[in-house]
Image (cartoon, rainbow, N blue to C red):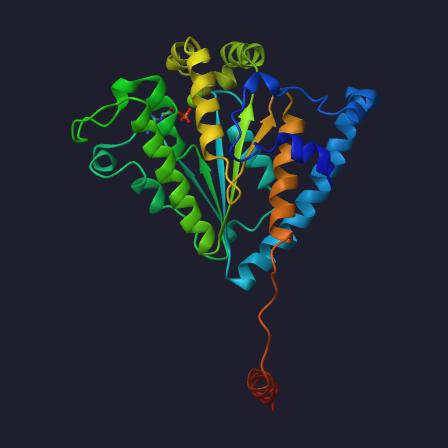
Length: 300
Ligand code: AMP
Ligand code: MG
């Protein structure tokens, strides 16, 4: 399992204004890791990932049987930071019946007829399930803040300044508090990739025919707004990292780091819940014994 010092360093402290440049996108997160060296750190991360994936399968089974908690995992990031790959790797060992993935794109006309939280509300995980949001209602304080012309034109007229965005952060915090109060555990990951690594991954998408489909020309257009995005992320992460739903800034320049951190936090969070398999009552035990007798008697 990853050290508490690493996880603490990645958690955005509630109520604190953070700067993303204070968060490393690479692999050498602690002095210990640095002295270990990259190859050894990578080997260690792979072992941690493997162990977590095995434990995640068991933890998910118990979450499903217990049927009281839901887990909502939110992934936000710049393009090519590795959201899709993280979902693919981290969820590779879990029972598909116990998890649900939803991706949020540019809102449809129907979605724009509702408030910005609505489309996510109808996709929330039910008890016993792990729900993954590949992007989320946070887009409405990220891409929409970077491009204010994307603010829903159907909203009643009003100021679109600081208080407008603050009201959205407040709504998000209140919603997440409501979910947590009612048994949904929330994990929020910002996959923190560097601008250089994004360039490298874009070039790979352009140079490798089988990866071309992953590239969209708008990716380059959005890259030009990098600084505005970083500011929007800093504002959002600072305003919405709470005791009940903290943000984690996950280093994303190396996929092995991203996958091991996300798997570790997901697994340890589920394991920390007071889960148990439903108990069989005496009456149920008698009914099971009866059923058994009936099945055996069929042969005679
Ligand atoms: P991808 O995840 O690469 O398929 O891209 C989805 C695109 O939809 C991204 O560029 C997002 O920024 C965009 N998107 C998601 N939610 C919203 C939203 N509420 N308003 C505008 N654009 C959005
Ligand atoms: Mg994309």
